[in-house]
Length: 201
Ligand code: MD3
Ligand code: FE
Image (cartoon, rainbow, N blue to C red):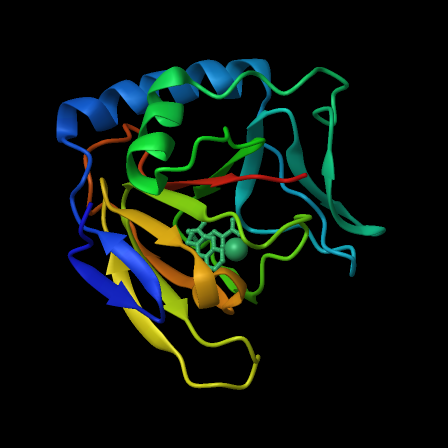
């Protein structure tokens, strides 16, 4: 598969997911959220994140005052629900990797939510790619290099866009600066969903 754009080493597949397929993924995610409700993890400084989160798969991403990590269970004590088949299919089609991801992190951005610049380094092996799927309202994505103070580039991610982070980009600093609330009709409640698929261990 050929990306329509590359930004900071990330391969961007703009509009890869057709609208009808996006709606089916959202329906799958409503089941995930029913089993494993969204919550706002606390950072190590005790401040709740503005992004609502939950996960599907063997592991879920979690954060509290003790730090960031992967957990085998949702904070309510239930297992994370399985990753929906439709989402696994996209992972295989785009990454070409034979292995299944261990975690599908669901990030939900309401109007004022953002995600500060960070690296994803809680996983055991950075040679596996990360896949990101954007749904709903536009989000301004920023990506830099492997050092916090380096130059960054920005790109608006729209509903149906897919990003693959591999190679050098796997350890790039990245974040979401803002949401253009109300730009998509996909979610009745508005907002943006980002799914990130990762191999954890
Ligand atoms: C670059 N999520 O969950 S997706 C995250 O839109 C996260 O919710 C953002 O950063 C979001 O950790 C950005 C694009 C993305 C995802 C994973 C990456 C970019 C990445 C991993 C390494 C480098
Ligand atoms: Fe990240």
